[in-house]
Each structure stands twice: as structure tokens, then as C-alpha cells.
Length: 302
Image: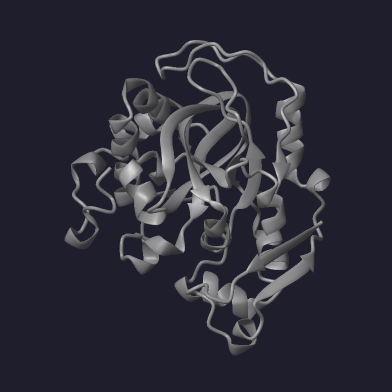
């Protein structure tokens, strides 16, 4: 298995040696079948179970049948998911719940809509350098995390799905470099499968990121994360970035009650126990009343 990414224009990569190469291809030292993440993923697929009705707006769903979830390692893998007219479906679960945010990243997206993704959960366990770059990370309180998703038996998420063009794939891969790219098959809220798989940015691992995406180079890692004193990306001792969490909650609320309640009750802190509803009612109280900095009000306004 190999990963091939065109990264010559990634803003965080500064070394001359890096810029002299348009792409890299590295043998994947961690086969998909051997990682803890994919072991859990296989467990989810072996043990599909209905999701019961809850206050989170999650209805009962049928077990996944013939669900072909696979890892996407290079641009050619992404191209296998293209529709006949050349569009690629993207699955949004955090800031991309906001159509305004999605269009700020993908100005030419089409067919923005709500969908359901079964057997995954949202977790605030991913340290995001963009929060440091924008001055909204709070390392002193560990309020520095963004969202990722990971397999979880019996969970069900309300997400968004939209389409981008083939030409946007390389930029998307560069921008989401620290994630594991998966092809998943969301369904409508009525339970019908969508026509084409969508790309999901799922939890990766620090070991894989360093050895595969950074090619084992401390210099490359430093340009990506180390310059912000981030020595681990995927952690269980961090809290949500306050501005980002507020933005995601507002974005979910704008999608309607079902999406809002699903986000509140099926999104977890890094402990995998505390829901966002519980967090905002206790330790995180006051977050929803805090306004983003003026320069970020539109970007993080829900």
C-alpha cells in the first residue's frame, strides 16, 4: 500500500528539499488490516446493530449490508469514486456542517445536503494547527482540539454531503493531510443509500502520520506541527477549541432539530464518555455566549 500526495504548494512546508519534489510515494509500513483503527472498523462491520431512537434524533436504522469501506491512499483511489459527470462526494461532520464554511473551502461545490453515516462517532481528539495560526487555540487549558470521526458500533451521525470536481482533489488531500481518507456510503435520513460513496476524513495515528505523510522526517513534521510545540496530534487529554465548538454547534442547529440533537448527544470529548451536551452544561458553560474575534466572525459564525 502506498500514499502519493502532491504537496509542493502546501503552505506549511518550507524546506527546499521538499519543494524540489512535486510528489512523494512511500510504502505504507502499517497495513490497513493491522492498525487499531481498522481493527475497530472491521469490528463495526462484523457486528452491525440497529440504532435505537433517542433524544438525539437518531431513528432505528437497518444493519449495514455489503458496506465497502476502504482507505484511499492516492489521487487515483479518489478518482475511482467519481460520478460519471466527474464529481466527487465529500462527507462533512464538523465545520463542514455549515454550508457557508463549506463554500469558503470549496466555492464551486454542488448539491449540499444532509445525510446519515452509520457506525461512526465524532470525537474532539485531534489537535489542529490552524487554531494556533488563527490565534484561537488555548494551550494553557488544552482547549486546542478539532473534530475527527472514528468507528463505533451502534453509533449514527447526521452529516452533510456535497460534491466537488475532480480538479479539487489534490488541494483537498493537501489540506487534510493528517487524516485517514476513507470511502464510505452515507444514506438519506429515510434510510436509502446514496448513489455514490463519499470521502470521509477519519482518525489517523501519530505513528502513521510521521512515517508515511512526513516520510519519517522531523523537519517536515516540524513545519506541519512542531513549530506550534505540538508533539502529538491524536490525544485523549485535550478539550475542544472554544470558537470552533461554538461554530459547529451553530452549524448543526442551522440544519434543524434532528442534526442539532444528534451533534449534541453523539459527539464526544476525547474521553469518549462526555457528550457535548453534557460538556456545555458543565465545564464548557459559557462557550456558546462567546463571540469569535472580529476577523473570524464570518468564518466561525455557524
